[in-house]
Length: 83
Image 1 (cartoon, rainbow, N blue to C red):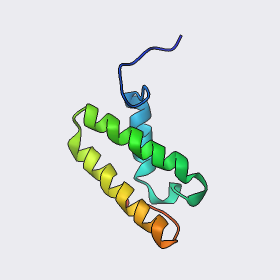
Image 2: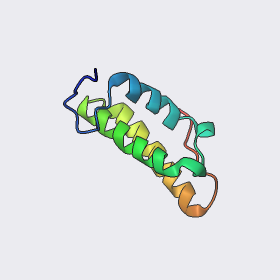
Image 3: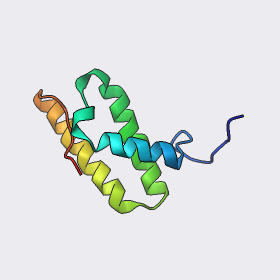
Image 4: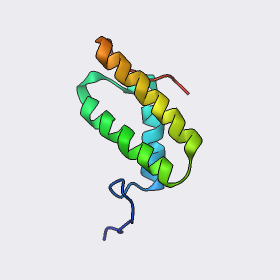
């Protein structure tokens, strides 16, 4: 049975958020083939971190997302800065 969580971020739990945080902050795991998923994960993970009042980690994600989007716009292979 699925447990219902009262979260705006589609029921993202701590374990999933931690996994996604690690994935999103590692440059070698991001590529253009799954950019829609990556963009959604950035959004969901950022929302979770803000809801949990983990503002320092939210700032790291925001910076990684910004870097990734800039590289998408420039046409190079997207990556994030390694934390």
